[in-house]
Length: 275
Image (spheres, rainbow, N blue to C red):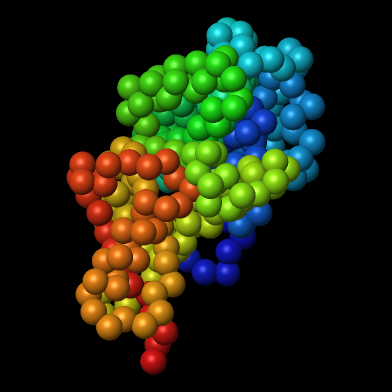
């Protein structure tokens, strides 16, 4: 069971693949989510993760940015991933989210195979196969091999119609926060995990004024690529103050920039003090 002192709309479950994906999953564990697992090709990449998180290493010494090598190593060992999910997730997961840094070999190479296992796992528990992904894009300075991995893995996940698909853009983190290299991934992961959790929490709040419930939250999560933001709006003197805050927050955060005019569904929640 998750470790919250309040209700959330959905039991979210996370599996981090590769070092980058493991750090993303860890950020959700730190918020109180307990259906969290980590997968890798070497146990060396587990050292930054909480001891309590169930882990699976294929123990092949890592993938060394070789996407195809990682994909090949997973073949025939899918049952071990299934067992990992059994230990970490149990029977009550509503959404399975695969967390991956797309530049490396392990995450980008294993992502599609893990998505397939997660779908079958959800169905085996009598749940809808709601499988999404939280992915990070590398910066341009990380080299051509990393870029090729990212493009190839992104296309595979997009074609597999994972939903929700949240895309963290590491280049934008540099622009917005200018963190040192050691703080880059932590900044991104904490920002996105807190945002995602905020809406999971708000969708479980009952209000006499308006309802944004779990079914409406699910409509958004099931619609493909998702962007989100939250802003503290101080004084409001005209509707333009609100519109500007919404626009600025959706276009100036750590998630990858998208063409908002092509969006199919949206929600805007106003949260105020009881007074």
